[in-house]
Length: 118
Image (tube, rainbow, N blue to C red; front, side, top):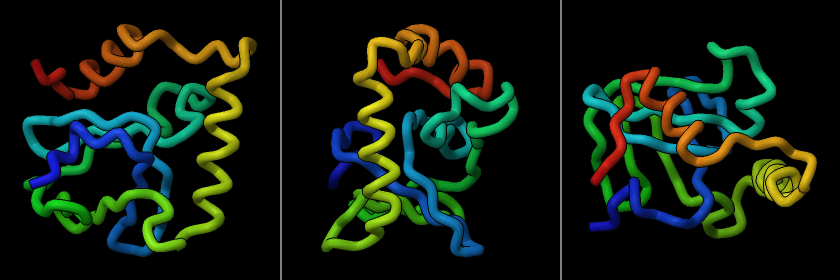
């Protein structure tokens, strides 16, 4: 079984209403997951970070409640999200991005109730 939290490929999440987002950060949560969408750090503190409740099931795709998580661009799908991800990667590689360090990102996730796997 592919563990959702150990996948290194880029991921996307689809809501039950059909909206799709690229996953920038993903953490387990006692009630499901916490995920950060790309450019979350440009939003105010309550935007761009979501707690999705439900059991995490599947081996890819995965389900969390009514949400579905897939590897981004699997089988040539979602070209717009693939482009968004490419822009995200360019942003992260920029010396001027100011993206928080991993321990700072972890702290934000913890503030949403996530936990950091050992």
